[in-house]
Image (cartoon, rainbow, N blue to C red; front, side, top):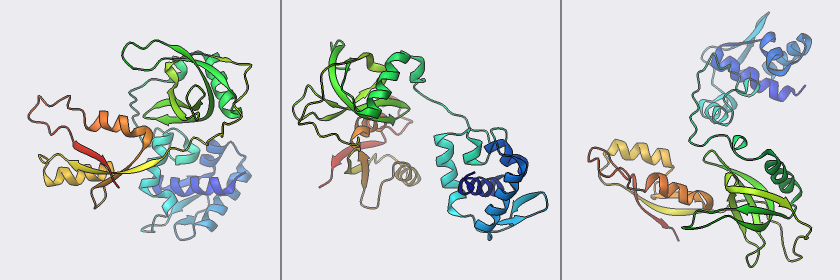
Length: 272
């Protein structure tokens, strides 16, 4: 039993649901009653200023400061990652209704399982494979490409394969949208000797940003918070989100409606 994980569960549940019982721990972690009792005691000893021990449960101390692991910000992040993981959030779906809306559907429903299996194994082992991939350039058809996957990237509810493109000089790391990989197969060819595997880390860069002058002061405050714009009118974006950022905030698709302030962003330039 990982008592650190269970203590965080107890803390979050007490803060947001009021109390935690042995039955809660038994349900969340599949542990026996005796272990759940020890987990409750451990949590109280770990967060003595926030949690109070009662004969049959642990509860939050009224008006106690909320530790960071149970803060609203942390809880929202956890809910965004997996809203239905009771052992992590400390809240049951029946206690907090979280509506998840996804623009893109589950990749597992659209990509052949054999292809997904090969992609995952190749990524784990950094194995050279061939993929039949189609991009979105005008008139482009799918073609076979030789790659070495090094990481998976989950961006905007879309799975992507981070892989070295072996058909390009210096074998740059590129992103391949998994649903656009129409087929994949092993190859007998080995990895090039000059290839230095990267970890898949994506560079982040700072951009100067200017918002639409038609916004009210309150709208500008809200959008600056939403986008993370600092006091120097700068925003930090990872290289792989730049296209989606422009598409989401800078495309003028609803400009015909004079009652809507759009686009939100009218200029984006690299800083420095």
